[in-house]
Length: 494
Image 1 (cartoon, helix red, strand yellow):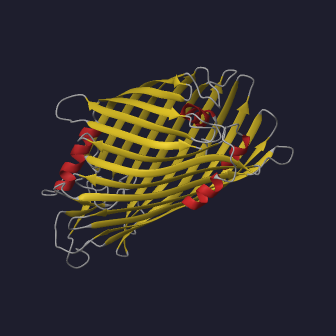
Image 2: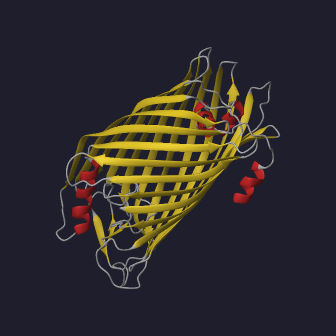
Image 3: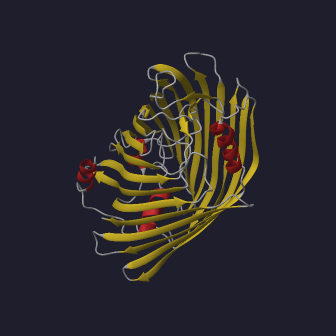
């Protein structure tokens, strides 16, 4: 994958960007680049770039959800580019990383736990084990030159994401998963002001979770949604023995776009729709199924003669019906609504030189309603986070610049409720895991982030840079701990 990416990157030597502020402004400025339609790359006016970086990320602190680690670190290598190769616009991104997680109490079978998957293995732990992760992901989009009097373009997006994880303690655990996606697309210009687009695709996500049986251990559960769980032993004979869980997921995806270009504004509206199911089996026996409907709406507009202001709204609604075993009657539902309304303004903005100041504000909204019909249970959570940020691009020498940015946000937990009717005595994972999660979801906290990035323009072809980012999550109230995140990057634009 890396060879393919670098071969495309070196196919042309043109470089339009030699500053990280220009890099960020180009990505934020191009509406089609941020859409689900690869064919839209042919319509953008972005500068070209090639970028590679080595990174280190870490997080520490007890203020986190129940399935995450209190201490984690990731070493990564990444690269991305946008190039014009013989008239074809090609955008690509490669991410590879190795992670180390410590003090993770419950998650012992998945790369990461998502609220839309109720079926996974939880093992109560003394938090002494290490959980290691690996990931390699490639995302490539390509668009043809415009044809039919510059009215039609075709494109395709290909994604592949390989993930693995392993636990070093007994009972040990392993996870292997793969995500594949292919989405052809097209855009058609009705006239100079109006363009429509369509993308259709398929997503495939097979995965396998294995908990070793080298030693007999109790306290192992196959969760079945919102408190309900089936006890297992890591040792012994099936069905009491815990073996492997297989996840087989397939989804059809579609996106419809509309683009308007006016005298003082450009707008892009996109509707997305995903539908599919994930089937979970344990040593060949059906555990459950999750039917998913995912709908999205986004609108983004560039305002002003220089298109230096941006207004955006993103809404994503995730509705899941989950069933147990081979039954066709839903045993529960999980609905989630996420929205982000934001406004960003740049001063002295230019696609090749970046900007002077950037200012933004907005609001994030999250609504979750998780219901189980039998045994009866419910978890509801509503959160609202207003945020604001301010950034400055400073020239500190003829060939050197510093980009600094401050981000502030405050999380309001408007509503959090958990109720489960059949608490099993001695089932400590269910009894305490969700109570801890409710405490986390219902917290009011302050999010403070500070980022600094130094750029040195070595020559017309090489622009090395170094970046440092810190984030502190500070909950209000006693006994909730905190969370500190650190991000380091060393890279080069070429």
